[in-house]
Length: 265
Image (tube, rainbow, N blue to C red; front, side, top):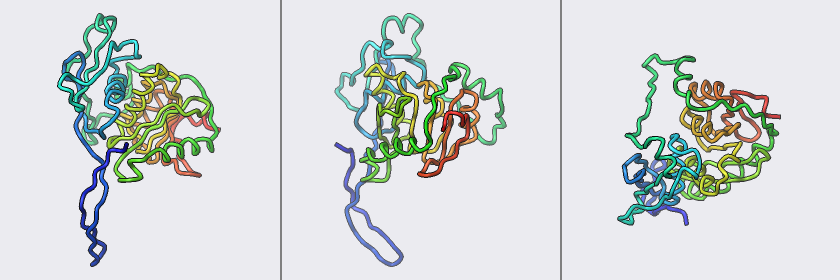
């Protein structure tokens, strides 16, 4: 079931006015708790809350595999807007990571740039040195598979999507959300639950390629990341440093390979 809502809208085209019912994507908050402690709040498309919570914990570096998780469920008040992730005893023995979540904001006017910044932002993420090769035309087949699964987007035009594939182009997971970060986190969370997260090699996104998306893919160990829109400068610098092939504006039959083009045949 796709989470959309029907609303009344007045459509204008020049002097023409039409009143009709339209569909919009539902957007609601989700609070993620770790061992009953608030950790993170995001606005999301309802559904698949547990995979989303697990994906957030993974891409934030809180967990490295499903073995670090003792359980995950909706909180005691039965609210679908709050999910609790319980860490394993082994994970907690290393020190509880659920301190207040911090984010590094880099503004265009701050003057922070260059290799020192990239090294600082990515120092906890291993460089990807595998060299899977993929035919350029094969990327479009994978992208089409993602587009065909975007039911909420087809109805509303208001959602993003992420699809994960293995090194042979085999489909692994798909997710859709009002937020591009959430879409990728949901897809990763699904693979975590299945114990297959390290099988993902190729990431297809319906969005632009920003620094955060590259870092999430890097934590996954993905070698190739594509986006329908283009990449930001920091995303390109980060992908270069981490050994990721970054491809923007991927729209059949074209695409811009920004980094590590040797993987694309």
